[in-house]
Image 1 (cartoon, chains in turn yellow, cyan):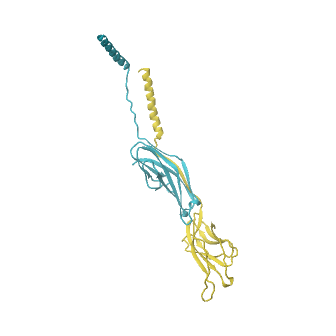
Image 2 (cartoon, rainbow over the protein chains, first blue to last red):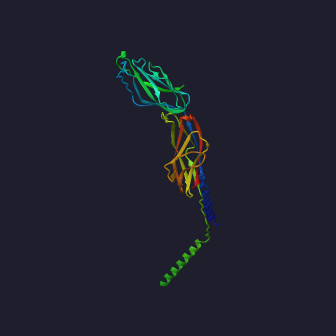
Image 3 (cartoon, rainbow over the protein chains, first blue to last red):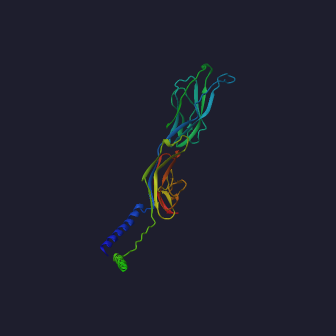
Length: 169
Length: 162
């Protein structure tokens, strides 16, 4: 074989070698790929109110004793989600010295979502327990607000900002 | 004069034939076979990702909390017949639910969203001879009742004959 032909043969061999080596390298010749994924769930507690601001108006009297009739409203729903055990839901009012009486209690509490306490009166701005034993769950209940006045208190209005909080027991 | 021109033509013809024969002196040939075998390449552009379910993923009153991730791209090169790509996790019994679906595949048909398990499940179908890609959408789902924790998955994507 002539030197020129030998050179050509060498070039062809190199090209073939490159094709043989590079093509599989480009594609890796692998038929599977792996990826590590970590799914982490952190502690979370969410609480919300479903409903609009309320106005409770006392404008009637109880027949017989002629005392002002209590006004009741159950239009608000309290909802929450917690993925941690041993939580409670407390309630507090912004009004430290109200003229009339306002109370709240729970109605139709989701089974297993917690235990309701007795009716809470907003006689001051202290924080009080409303639902205890809240576990890893999503729950809801209706809020029953009751406004009470007597005839000696006369007329007027009290404004409250009621805050519900989910905290550790 | 005419005979002189005829002689010149004959002479040129002889020179041409001789030069052609001379140029083919030492010519040889050999056969080159280029063989392309069945090649399958698949890769994920990100080695590891983290999905976190936190307070922002929860809605008060709902038990299920979800988070999604679309940061990963699956790439492949296939020169064989029609294939499919499957996905599976290394976790035999994950605590939380992890789903995956292929979005906007450049080739093939995306299978419906699947919950990852240790058994291979179809992710992409009818992938022909192509080099293509798709976005991987992961969805992590946890129930409030499941509490906190983490699952570490190694997810394997495999090209298989369909």
